[in-house]
Length: 453
Image (cartoon, rainbow, N blue to C red; front, side):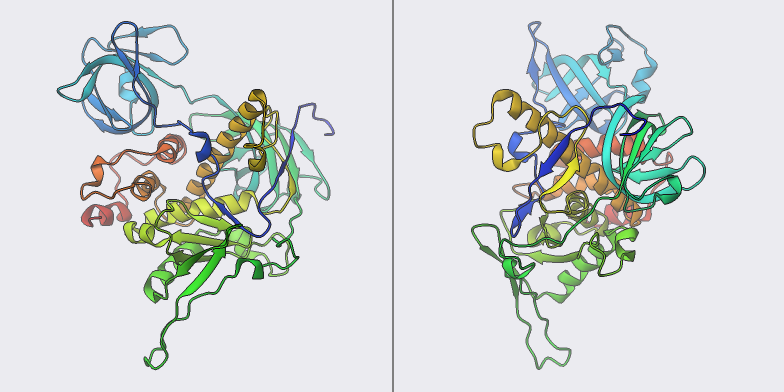
């Protein structure tokens, strides 16, 4: 890379050429980003760690379902710093989305943890390594700010820049160009890049092994009853994956119309503006399907994003449905090619190849693949939030959407549901990048509070 001396990895990501990939790429590794169990200590105390999911001032908060109480004897500090004190200003910084570790004494009767030590993670000045497609230009001045990989990235005069292929300067950079950068995230959530490289990635349409594009899916869209009632509707169907398992696409005009409307709005403007013959354009289509055992969107290389019907029915708010569906859109935006070479995150030693994870990888190789899987999953969760926000939906509903969607049994009182990993990670991102003015309530929030699930 001309003018830039920094290590890069090339990863070859293989996506099934004719089949299904469910948007849950890191689940097989048992990730524990936000749902960490209580751990025992030699002193008899227990430790809880994760994202704050609720705050009950002045002296209580929840860490992913674990209720924490504080007192005048509670000390506060920063994770990784060997210093803490009582009566600390850090106590006021505990809010929804804060990542922290709590050590305390369990109160079995009250089902809570009385905190003796609370340590917050300092997300300011965090080093960020990123590679993703630019979906939006937030500011086009001499020091532009791009939205890529779920981050807002500022390019300054001090940023070491490299341009590849037909790109020669920042004037050539637009949505659809890929940005590989490293930098530091400030208190405003914006990443100031110290190094940045720009690429034009060539895409090719998803194809099956026999060379056809969509026939291999055996996709048949539903037909709806005619307005005069003379012609009945007919359910569609889709066969996915190597097993060719069939899923029914209900001929429910109202439900399918809602799913399509929300999905179309999530697709970024640059994708919508691409001409039909552009190889970078993804043929996004959205349908609800009968898939009662699936709790994530189903995305295919042909551009289909399928929503399990029972989840579409659970997510009565369009803000929540948008957050769920954005996960599938985000995956397709980051992985639009078949057997394409993609720059991986700096420091990842091995390419993520799901097919190899179960065929005898050594421990070091498996650890590297695990690390890559975590980064790819978190990348998708960040991008999904940015898509929801750009579409005009409320990104703060995303953690609730996943809590509702991933519940094995859906209770009447959803406050009893725990937040899954995706909710915890997104709470942290929301707290950094999508802060709401104190006391401000969005129209969508008011609607959600007035409705019941």
